[in-house]
Amino acid sequence: MIQLFMPLNFLGFVYREIRQSLANIERLFGLLEKPVQVEDRPDAPDLEVTSGQVRFEQVAFHYQPERPILADVSLEIPAGHKLAVVGPSGAGKSTLARLLFRFFDVTDGRITIDGQDIREVTQQSLRRAIGVVPQDTVLFNSSIRYNIAYGDPEASEEAILRAVHLAHLDDFIERLPDGLDTVVGERGLKVSGGEKQRIAIARMLLKDPPILVFDEATSSLDSGSEKAILQALNEVSARRTTLVIAHRLSTVKDAEQIVVLDQGRVVERGTHRELLARNGAYARLWQHQQEHEPTTANASPNAGD
Ligand code: ADP
Ligand code: MG
Image 1 (cartoon, rainbow, N blue to C red):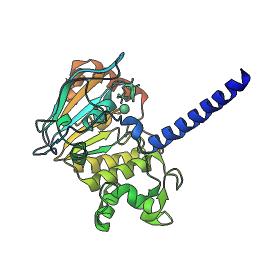
Image 2 (image 1 turned 45 degrees about the horizontal axis):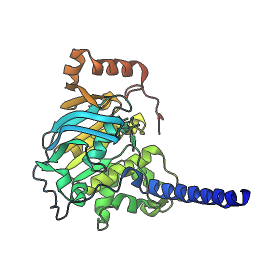
Image 3 (image 1 turned 90 degrees about the horizontal axis):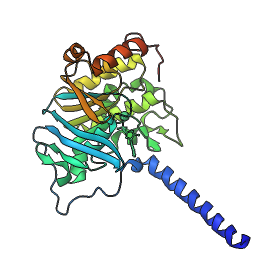
Image 4 (image 1 turned 90 degrees about the vertical axis):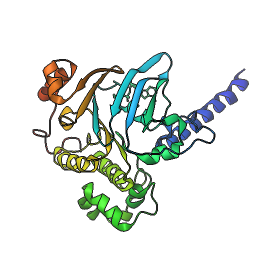
């Protein structure tokens, strides 16, 4: 018996080791979030962005059937406008961004861009149209230049430098041994969460897409850079369709439309003033954050960076 078990155990060990290293590789490339079942339809046309209107129509979604994540979510972001989604952690906010980027397909309902169901168009054209600044940016083990120009290998030096400047990365890059050619990532220079976010912002600025998604895009920045970056983000998003996901309400209180998501459902929507006047979920979140969380006005200078 023992002789039979030994090799099986050993094989089990090898199998686990291989699985683990594959998982690490997948994580590095952000593939864990991207299941293989999302495929282009045969002969799918490219998405044609005419004005950039985004609609979620009665969207439902689950990762596993026994655990619904989103239910009956309807949102409309008129072309060139901004919509903010707020809500407690785990509400399903990042899932909305993943669905728009089509990392997963909706379970029910549909998502359209300028009237085209995003399942009907090529993923490549969809992803070209959308720039995401994610919650956790994974950097490639490569130069900063590569990490910024990723997606546009023909980007000019001038365009890269402009994106670097708008993302407030000039000082950071000036301090590096090889400037833009310094290698960063797991096996290169360590960069802070705030610097990673600014690299992601520069990447998005260079890509210059018609639709923008910021998923807690300034959450790892200290209050000083947060203010400057928010201003830069506001400038780029001025005439573009923008979905802003925020934990800190102070960063979105000027949005034209705020949607409050709780346990996968839209529980309130309106402007900051309207939502405060309702005295409901948003007002409670706002009150809580005023009391417990550092805001741009009173945060310690190094918070989170
Ligand atoms: P939020 O961004 O509002 O904090 P998320 O959209 O990230 O929330 O997550 C919503 C829920 O879905 C959470 O309960 C989370 O644990 C779950 N979830 C997120 N990603 C996955 C996944 N890949 N597989 C299974 N469950 C997930
Ligand atoms: Mg999230």
